[in-house]
Length: 348
Image (cartoon, rainbow, N blue to C red):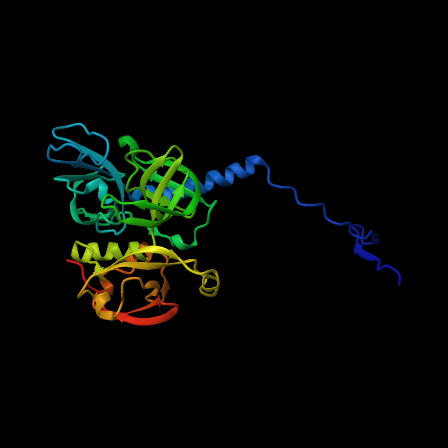
């Protein structure tokens, strides 16, 4: 079959014959300058969206050794500084507990230079979160993102006040999403975001944002040169924020157990899709777990419909909303699965 001849109308109205179209040349990768411009635009966009809501926090403490939450600040009495960000237009601010815990006076400086005394609404040292309140309205506030959707290698932007220098912006990537960090109380905070965006003293409590300017984490610690950690904005963090705003504290539930991770037999691990359970090394007599029928030596496999592989998996469930509710649990006992239902009690 003969090749089809393509025709078009020439400028003079005559008919001309066009050659068969040639294969398109392979697309050229963007030039370095174009990539740099795109990167710069993403950082600039995130900074413009978030910076107006980032605040500088100054605290004053009674004279006591070892109570400095940040760098020494000028003025009478020991004190320190940190960062935070406004999350409601009427003045609620999220920051780290270690920035403001035990402070006698707290003051906040907004991005427009205004100063306000701040009230500590509540703080939770176990998760290193705290909420402040200032008497102001119509304030710029951040948009929250979903930390469960971010990926290793993704661009993130840190905005805070290191060493008291206001509104410093640094950028980097998400380096890891499975780090753990112990709060000052010794409680393990898991699923911490690790980033190589430069963090320094004073960045604590500041915002970690994605390229769209949505806050996905609260900068909380510097673990070493080029390694920063942030508490993710996830459902647990939002629940803690809500409890701090509504009651000023975080209620926690109590089961009355202590455990240690225990490896599961390979066939069972493959079947369940988890490598470990939590072997109970203590069951408090008269506690909710004992009342539910749990015993020393049981291996806790699941609680609340979620796998249990370590203490932190149980800790995540022990927030105030669990108190007084029925919590289904599955344990491995002498090679057989046993289902029980516990009713967590309030932790006094």
